[in-house]
Each structure stands twice: as structure tokens, then as C-alpha cells.
Amino acid sequence: MRTNLDFSPFYRSSIGFDRVFNLLENAIPPQNGDNWPPYDIAKVGEDAYRIVIAVAGFGEDELTITHEPNLLVIEGAKAENTEVQHLHHGLALRPFLRRFELADHVSVVGAKLENGLLIIDLKKEIPEEMKPRRIAINADPGKKPASKRIEGNVAA
Image 1 (tube, rainbow, N blue to C red):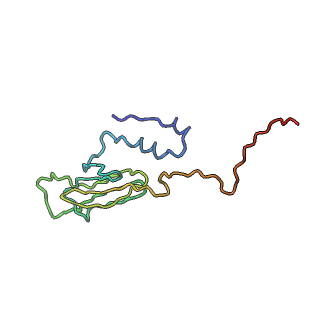
Image 2: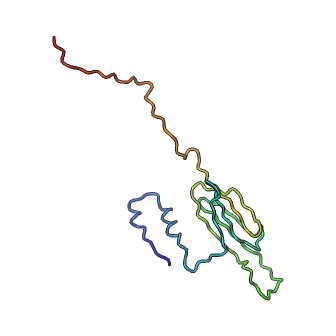
Image 3: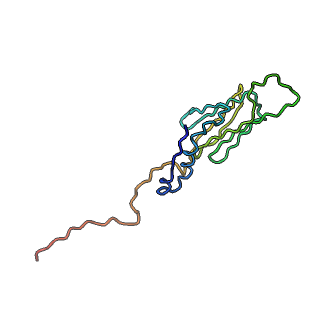
């Protein structure tokens, strides 16, 4: 069941979250959407992930992996063989395009084709300048601390 959510109230009080709202709107696939080829997404470490896609029948030269900012695109296209006349064609070797939205700073570490499975390893690496850091609180070394002096009436 697809529900259309209206995020317009959030646009009035938030700035720079357009990408998040677009992700939420597109998160629910259409009811008759293409779910081929099947795939798994697994977390294999603290900041490591793996996508495994069933691509039986496709060779390395028939698969294309493209990493764009915040997007991973896997495309498969089998060359047409007109010399063969199929009496029964049950293998799903149709072309496909699969997109995965990636978080900031997620990069592709490697990809391999093994036993009909395309395995793509991902890692989230936050740059040092973006990691949380502790800020030391220091007094200004050029400024002398003000002395505390209590004044009172002195009898003469």
C-alpha cells in the first residue's frame, strides 16, 4: 500500500533537509515495481556494509557499477544472441538497473563477481575535519586575571 505523505509543513521550518525529504518520499517503491534482480544489504562491521546482488548468467563485462555522490548504480545488460532459438526461455537475463542511495561519506571499497553473485563492499569514512573533537578551554595567556578587591568604609 502506497501512502503519499505531505512534507510541506516541514519545509516551512527546516533548511537544507530537501534530500532527506526526497529520500523519504521515494523510500516506498511503487506497488508493481520491478524487484529484479534480488539483493541483500548487510552490515558487516562498525562502518562496513555489503550489497549482494543475484546476477546469475551475467559476466563481468556485462555489468556496470557507477558510484556518484550519494548514489550507487548497478546496471546489467546481456548481449542479444540471435543465433540461438530458444524452445523454452526461463532464465531471467533481462537488462536491469538498480539504484542505492548512499549516506554521506560512504564509498565503494571493492566489487567482485563470485558464483553468480555480485558482491559490493562499502565503507563509511568520515573525514578527520568532520569528526567530533574536544575543544580545550584555556584562559587568554596575554591577559592577567582581574584581582578581587573588596572595598569598605574605612574609619578615619
